[in-house]
Image (cartoon, rainbow, N blue to C red):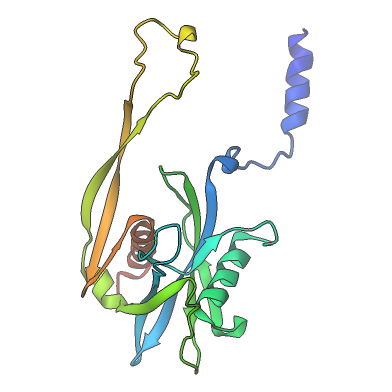
Amino acid sequence: MDTKKVRRQVAAALHGHSVKIANTDDYLQAAVTVPLVDIDGQPAVLFEVRSGTLQWQPGEICFPGGRIEASDSSPLSAAVRETIEELGVQPEDIEVLGALDIIVSPIGVMIYPFAVHIATAQPLTPNADEVAEVFTVPLDFLLNNKPQVASMEMATKPLTGFPFDLFPPDYPQGYRRRSKYKVLFYQYKHYVIWGLTARVLEDFLTIYRNRTGGL
């Protein structure tokens, strides 16, 4: 093959190429909102407790949101759609404040978070099939209380049929420790906010602190 010709072909192929994450299909892609609400004139963050009948993470605390469907025009539209469905609010009740950083989890989930403000004159009517209850935490409490930090270890295990014959003889054939990642825990009253929800919350609080210096 002619090297110069290949270089021209590669340059032409990549000209104007829109860079994306190539292996998004390896991740469950979800979008959530971080809802700010007014409680007695003070800002608070709203959370959901997932229904105990759900197959995935029943009873855990989360933000409104869910899987990005093929019919969603964007991660934002998915986050807003899920928030409307789960909380029983109207589209006009939701003010989108901006996008937060994408969270790529070691457990195979990619989350697109968006900060929103929810203002409604009507009491929330959460979808009982998905939401057991909602609660709020004052923003100043979250800004002034650091989370507890723990660590989780990731490992890999080759499955039956893995071609070990292609590797050196001393290549390990069992579990292989790969890396550690932090797990955060925010406690408020009897509620424990942890996992990916806590990571999204931490990012939101960090951005807010860095841009405003806090309250």
